[in-house]
Image 1 (cartoon, helix red, strand yellow):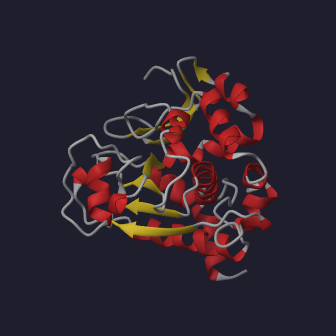
Image 2 (cartoon, one colour):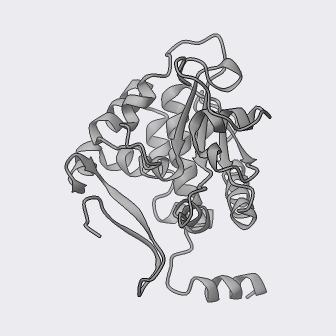
Length: 263
């Protein structure tokens, strides 16, 4: 046993090592991606619409509907941005995904990119998250090595690349148009809408922005179906959700519970 193995067991004594790609695969990982790339793009979007998955970044906008705004045909490249800026005080749910289950997020991002015809995924993470940036980069590198990311993914015509973009600590960059300005190398400042990102986003190209947690819900929906997902939690906002509990409480931490649970 290496020192790193010993450290992992000490750090995560009772948690499956899902950040390791072999463990993730053993537990069903990337099967949803395999299923998605042989489906029609519209079929993937319709399944997410059926699930009524809503954005976990705060706005609660229906995810499938948001994906449908991306133009079917475009002479310009299309982009997917995954928002992990997480600049609000006391907010730390996305970094738990990066640490404990990064491949779930990666798989969800790839399914989203396939559904919308995007070939480039930018993961926007606040620069202070150096530890979690390194963890996610390791997971991305492992996914590339297994052809889950890259050219002709899993033998399909679909190709996509994924890049991490480190933010510079500006709270406003959690807002989607500020995030795009930041990636472009400009000052993080909101844009006037319309036009909306699906029409004019990164470098004037069609772009969709989703939260890290939102995308992490996608593999389960594709594997088990939108009807299965709708049965979890509150009817008008289904699924599970990550609650970040901090402050003067007995057991602070991040808890995954069905939506609709009262604090």
